[in-house]
Image (cartoon, rainbow, N blue to C red; front, side, top):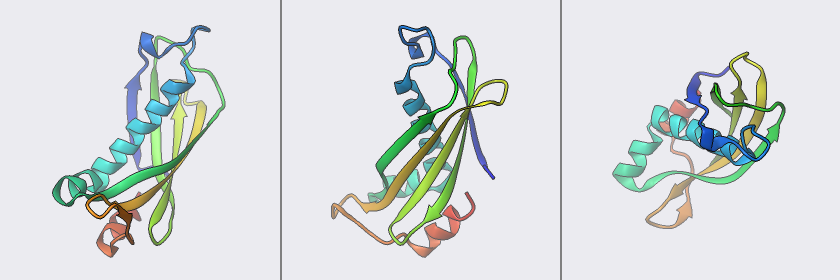
Length: 132
């Protein structure tokens, strides 16, 4: 189940030479989904306050269907797995007909930007991430 959804407008600048949405734009849609997750879980505020937060270490996207201009996309985001220091994120990118156009998968680590090293995910944050 996806608790986070983000509707984005397809821009003319998202298109490639074939006049459909460029692969790079799908990666930006996934990035918007991650930012939405960072904000919903408090990870963005945690980073601002303490310089500790999530760092993306891996991303992957499987393309299923083309997207076209004009239109909108719906980015659905959820956490699928949590380890001691890392967690996995899945994004479904859908067109206006609710067809899946891409499935993205990310791995993020909990990172202390002051010490420049990974840390265990704090229990208080783990409880919040479990909701997503």
